[in-house]
Image 1 (cartoon, helix red, strand yellow):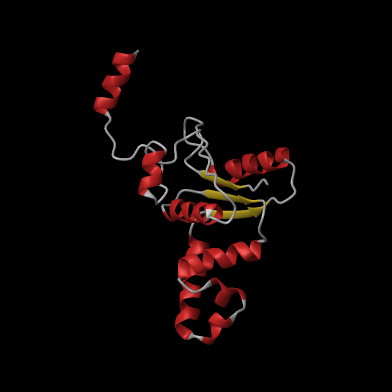
Image 2 (tube, helix red, strand yellow; image 1 turned 90 degrees about the vertical axis):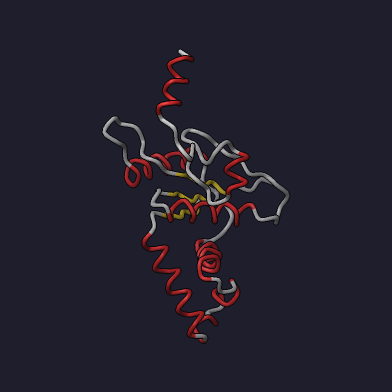
Length: 168
């Protein structure tokens, strides 16, 4: 079987093995990008940017047209939206959270453009704080069935699930 596999690889070259995360060094570290049926774990001390990294990976993947489900166990939807809008618009998060961005036309337009971009990409955010893991799995299954779908062979279409979970 190994000969057949090697011949298949020779005949079917590709530039990218998995789904690009938007971070080349991370993709190289995990073997070429986010791969089907794989779990990639990011772990570090509190407050070093794991959630921000997960958000950015999610947005980068969704910008490619690949559906992303962001499951969050920590933040409110509003806090999460403030972070995403700040990242996409370049407007400081505090200006978004307190509404002062609306007093500056350039910031206001940048935030509005970020809002439109979020509407146009296949990105779904769900707060699952306090939910039992079985319920979270059921939510993922429903999302895959309703939003992602399958190809003609019954194989799930490309998608990414980001599960932002903090355990102290």
